[in-house]
Length: 69
Image (cartoon, rainbow, N blue to C red; front, side, top):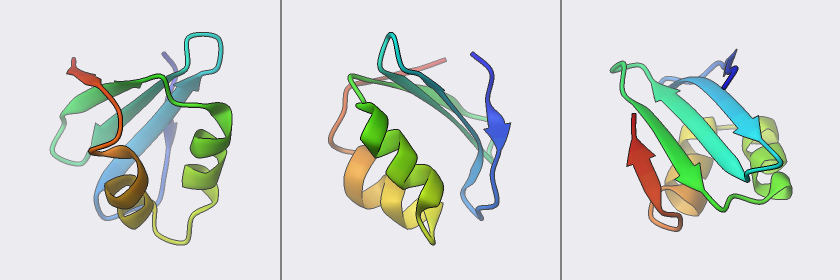
């Protein structure tokens, strides 16, 4: 999945597959996770959030099943 770089102290890049509803996040640590069942509006809100890290922690982190790649 293609990810785009983001400006965040926690997240390095973010990608989204709308067909599979997969959100892929690369962290500055180098870890990459795929979150399953993420709707498009959640991805859009993440990308528009003033703080991507805060939005991720409040809305995505503990709300969706994930796989570490």
